[in-house]
Figure (cartoon, rainbow, N blue to C red):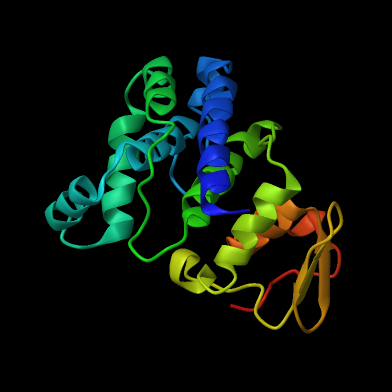
Length: 206
């Protein structure tokens, strides 16, 4: 998938996710996500923050936050998460063409934010991201070397990952099989998907 296709997919995923979350009720919006300490609405706030960001605005946020990215992003997510969810969904739709990403990273990393965090929001309530295997494997290829930097872990290190829903495999070592989106969530250090995978140890290597 080339860069233009990735941006098109990213826009589509933001629009679909906004529709999915807006259709939920207040109880679901306030439910816990897979992100520690974040409600579903906080995950939405995080995605709005990224979609609306520019290099200048994100740089200013980082300076104000003491150059501690995790703290800056968490505070922004919680602050925005307190806004009305329909308003946040409207903002995500309005900024669906946003192209912020960390300097030097490929566009697939921006797509990964939506696929991974969208799953963080939807899976706890029994819903799924409407992501194609092609979307997921495009992000997997980008995350393969960035996983430890982005997620402070590399559970795929020393493993061979094989998708069961498309023709994709990568790595060497003991094989782990699963759907492309579940493999992506595994690489993103989401231990909640371990039961969906074949060949994974209960505690993957860090």
